[in-house]
Image 1 (cartoon, rainbow, N blue to C red):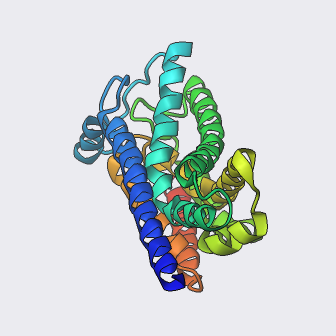
Image 2 (tube, rainbow, N blue to C red):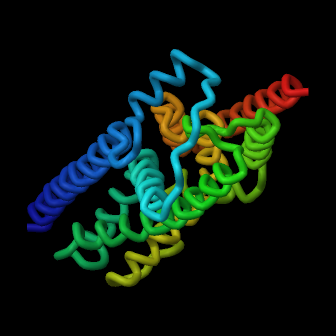
Length: 269
């Protein structure tokens, strides 16, 4: 009987895993399509990326900012963050759903996983709100073009240098460790119930934000709607979180960003 019960539990856990993976995939695909199509924006991300490749350095006038346009930019940022960050958060969400099934609310693992994900996305929504405000401010002082990238080399160089230096900071390393070891994070921060799931999701989001905000700021350098830049950053974030015990990836990225920042700063002199 014990063997049969164990086999049944394994089958349920496998089913849970497939269901959660399917749900996360739908979220990522829909978010990716929204980002690629640039819904509500004057140009799609495909068009903007092609223009960046064919006409690098093109100075196009920025759109007129109104509260409605700011709302669209906020949605663009938030949904883009969902598309970029949910894949790297998937291992934590999958493990959380498994632990809920085993230890907490065995009858509601999907609902708990959804609440956990919601908490995670709330944090990135806050980041997106700040990014939108910063973009609006940069446009208002003429520091960002219609291609949604910084117009002044010294400012772009400063962002590269700041991101590179932050890669080596103790705060970055501490947050990255939490992202790289989801089981440790979940065991140390476990909370029961729906409210606990929301708080845990937000905690995980804060650690993820602490790990990745500097990299996300690089979107201002390469182009907020440049698909090649978006994809490169998303892939790197995923690889960095998988590189537990291999700090060379973070160190190499820091060196590359610092060198690129210094080169850009010198070229502007």
